[in-house]
Structures are given as structure tokens and as C-alpha cells.
Amino acid sequence: MFHLELRQFPHVARVFNLTRDELDERFARPWVSGAAVEHEDRRWSPERARLTIFEGPELRPEEIGMGRGWATVGKTSREVTETVLAQAQRGPDSRPIVEAFKERLMAAASTPVTFAEVAELAVAEYPLWRASERLALAEQAVWELLHQGGLAMSGPNGSIEAGRWQPVVISWSTWTDDGPDAPTLLAR
Picture 1 (tube, one colour):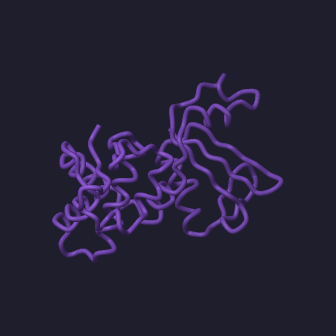
Picture 2: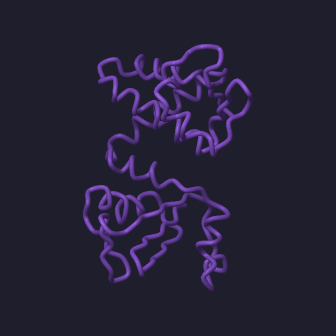
């Protein structure tokens, strides 16, 4: 389930227990298109408001009541704002491609693979795509699988924890280094 917060000083709105379709239709797609999101008789403009999205378990009514909902979300869910908005930006037609590539990547990661090998897998799967599109697909698949717990990342000094994933994933050298000290991914 997805939970979100809209914040535009001095107003805050929170929505709990959204399905992915509800999230995309009511919030994510309008947001990335630059349109104001209408919620609770208010218009939330992407230029002035901030949107934060979490993914986690469905919250029961007693977990939301008395203002406890957002604190519960912080304890039980993980932030996925960038991922969800990037997916909404690419559009609904891109989801099957990302999901299919994630399955292919999980099969390949039954033994440790480097990021360069993941990029090569994208080249093999989509040889006619531009290099930037293949790299974007590979990066999105790795990022989602890391956050969904499907992949673990390791470096020369052992496991790389979630707080250190982003600088590794966005580094160009990560995607081009195939040496013995290159970070690796392994299916969990």
C-alpha cells in the first residue's frame, strides 16, 4: 500500500492506504505533468507544494487515528517518492518493460553480478535502444529491486547498507567498472 503527504505551508494533507492505481491516477501522474493535485478542497501545486510517498503495509484504522498515522508510516514504510514519480514520468506503458527486465535481472543475479554486467544485460535485451535508455532501465530495475528487498549490494568490504546505495547507484564508474573491487548485486 502507498501513503502520501502533501505539504504547502501552513497546510498538510496525508492520505493512507492507496493502491498503486489510485496513487498514479490521483496524485503521481498529475504531479509529474505539472498539474495541480486536488485533494481535500485544496489545490496542491507542484511548484509550491512538496509531495512525499511511502510504500508499506496497509494501516488499520486504529493505527491512523488520533494523529498517529504519519508516525506509523515512518516506522513501517520506506520512502519511494523518487521511484514512483520517475515511473509516472515514463508513463504506464513502461511498467511492463521494467518488470520484465527486473525478472531477467533476478535470474542473472543468482550469482553475484556487477553493475557493468547489468548494463550489458540491458544492451543484450534491447539492442536497438539508445544507450541512455538502456542505462536508465538498468538503473531503475536495480533501484527498485534493492528497495523491494530482491537484491543485496556488496562491495570489497562486505555488504552495502541502504543508506549508502544512492551514491553507488548514481556513480558513472559503478556502471563501467568490472574489476575485482566493483560493487556486486546478488538476488536474495
